[in-house]
Figure 1 (cartoon, protein in one colour):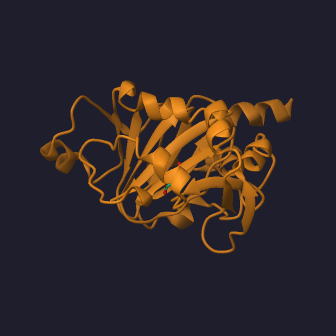
Figure 2: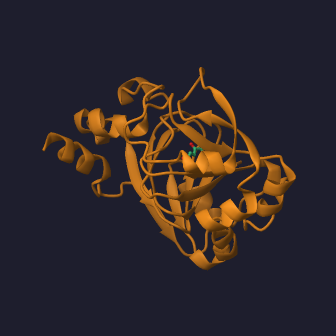
Length: 239
Ligand SMILES: O=C(O)CCC(=O)C(=O)O
């Protein structure tokens, strides 16, 4: 009974507390919104071709034997790296519900190998994002209840292409109030810690992103993710 309750708590629909912008994003609108995270809800057809090539079956056919260096999902130092094929990663990508961040492999980052760069060539960048080299895109695929624990860096955009991802964001320097352990999984934090926090006092915001939703993460904002589908494909662009 308790087990069922904790599972439900981790996946329950919490209200979205991140501003969602629909329609074109002009420069002046971006300047107005950029002090805080926001989601730009895009027309899903823009990346329909990329999404079709990023399904489980398509990627296993096109990239199954691609050899990868994949790291664990924990934040900060101590991440370990494993060399395996994309197919081996997918085969091991069962629900990450009961594994810690240090145990969960997470395929996400820039991929310099030619076969991944070719795939990323067809990704259509979110409007307004400028980058010179597609190798600076971070592409990922991950399974149910996986995700990365809180961390921060420069400003970035993150788009969900397939599946569903819950984003958690908090203003810079709120790390200690979030009470997370960088080696623990986001799923464990959501289940055990989040219910004990006063989200509005900390400034913690959250929202579920679906295909076509592009989130803007302002520089220094702490953020963590929890994937809510068996196959979530996503891309981050650092700005
Ligand atoms: O999408 C994810 O799961 C991780 C993205 C992220 O943390 C980032 O882009 O910095």
